[in-house]
Amino acid sequence: PDLLDKPDPRPDAVYYALDHWERPWVLLIDIDAKTIARERATRAVSDEDGSGDSEELLDSTGILDAEPAGYPYAFEDIERAIEYGFEVRDIFEDDFNAEETMVVYTGQGVHVYLLDSDPAHRYDAKSREVLNDLLQDTYEIPIDPVVTADRRRVARLPYSLHADVCSIVMPIESPSFDVRSATPEVIQK
Image 1 (tube, rainbow, N blue to C red):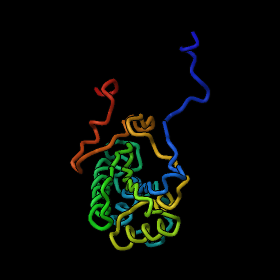
Image 2: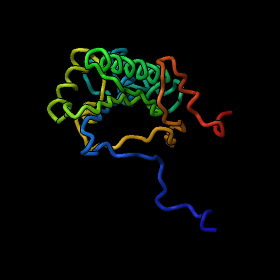
Image 3: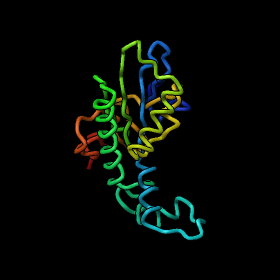
Image 4: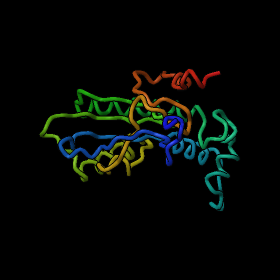
C-alpha cells in the first residue's frame, strides 16, 4: 500500500548539480526553443508601438497553434535549437580543441557540454562571461547566458523524463535527431 501512495510533493523532473568544485571544467550551454521562437516571432511581426507581450506575439505568428500545440515554440524551433547545439559543439572542438563534448536534447531545447578535465583549464566566472559574449556576439547563437555563467546551476539528468513535455532527456549524435523519438513508447499513439 505504501507504494501506491503518491509522495507529496512528487518530482516532475530529475536534476543534478553542476557545482562540483573539484570539476570547475564542466561548461554547460543552454539553448531554448522558447528563445528561438520569440526571436522568430519578433522578426515576423513588426510591433511599431512595442506594446505587444510575448504570448500575443507568439499567438499572432501562429507559433502557439503549431505542433506541439500550446507550447511557446514549434517543432521547427526545437530543431533549430538542436542545430545551434551542434554549432556550439563544433566551436568547442575547432576553436577550443575540446576533446570531449556532448549535446543533450532536453525536451525543450539542448544543453551543450564542454567536458575538459585538464586541471589547467579553470572556467571561472570571467571566462564564462567571455564565452557568453563570444557565442552571442560573434557567432550569434541564442544561448541563455545566465546558465552558462552560473556554476551553481542544476541540469536535467540525461535519460530522465522531462514531465512537462513527456520527452526523455538524451544525448544526441546528430542535428538530424527526430525529437519525436524521445517520446516514451507508453505515451506514443
